Length: 324
Image (cartoon, rainbow, N blue to C red):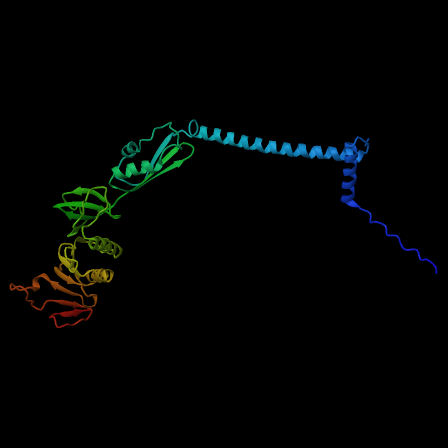
């Protein structure tokens, strides 16, 4: 029988990077064993490896150099900023207050020529505010390269809290501005029971409810533009009274619906009660507001002669007549 030649399998040729790597490896091994290797590719391969190692080493050195240079530069800049740079040449004071430029800058105690960065702004603000009681706020700003700006806001007298036969003038923020023997032309607050009142402090009461009521009343009176309130009596929290121009006593009753009561009182004062009206305006219930003239009382206490005026058309049996 004829013999068939079996096909001979030839090994696959290695190509690409795997063959190149094997050749270089064999030649390197041959060089180690003492054989002579003259291949230009082998020499080029060795040179490229040396170059890469050198480049990596140089790159690390450059990084260390740049970091060191940056750190040194920043240190020099910081040192100059805290010593030679930014000397203070101007101190500017702005804002409305009763205090002069000299009074404010003396307390600030800022020396010209000193470094601008090193000054403690918070400490200076506190020192000025604590010593100048007529201020509501103090703010210090550094304006580079050479200016310090001190911005102040003066307090506006809003009320005079009566305590221990004296008056403590209070600003609209509640800070005690000064002590006085008179109200100074602002609304007197009676029956407040102040707690350790001293100029520079914020007003407090021995009864927390009275402090809350005080703030609410002043706020509502200002927002309603009710001008002419000479005093506010909060001695009795269930019988709050306002003195209007010394001739009309406004009875608010308890501290409920204060806004509505005050708005109602203002409307009646503007529209119905003239400059000659003297007496008591009851707005304890805004829907049944009444005005009782001072001459309505007979000589016998508690009797009424029928001169009460009712507002809003209410009728509860009290003698009088509705207006409007």
